[in-house]
Image (cartoon, rainbow, N blue to C red; front, side, top):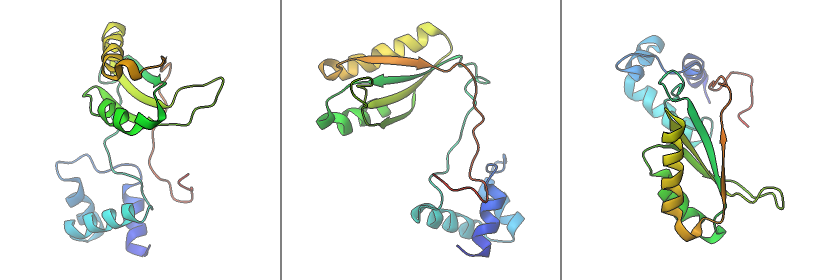
Amino acid sequence: MDDTDRRLMRASQAGLPLTPEPYQTLAEQLCLSKDEVMQRLTAMQEQGLIRRIAAVPNHYRLGYRFNGMTVWEVPDERIDELGLKVGQLPFVSHCYHRPRHLPEWPYNLFAMVHGKTQAEAEAQIRQIADLLGAHNRGHDVLYSTKILKKTGFRSGQSAG
């Protein structure tokens, strides 16, 4: 990581500029080309210095009041296949595999759903259950009760 990478990280750590062309805006701020900004961000991602570049919507502001982390117990040998299918559903914002903690926590597949009403969220959960079919050995949902501030990398913090 050189000085230009550090300047780029500092300029983007609070989020990309909210402009029609955020990479161009960063490039202009740092006296770089847009291509160089994109190449450097890609290289930092490939090196594991940054995990991802993604939009982080505030679901509550968008009217989604029923945000639930669904947890599923599915066969370990099918987790990749089933997780891919669940993650491709249009209403699932993120989906991932987590280890079980038996006997208290048998769940190994997590998928976040967002509904404007409880009925909408419950319908989404039923769709996941239908998709998993006989592979669904049990599930639960943990609804959000408060908004947590989401932030990007901060200089001086480890990315752990």
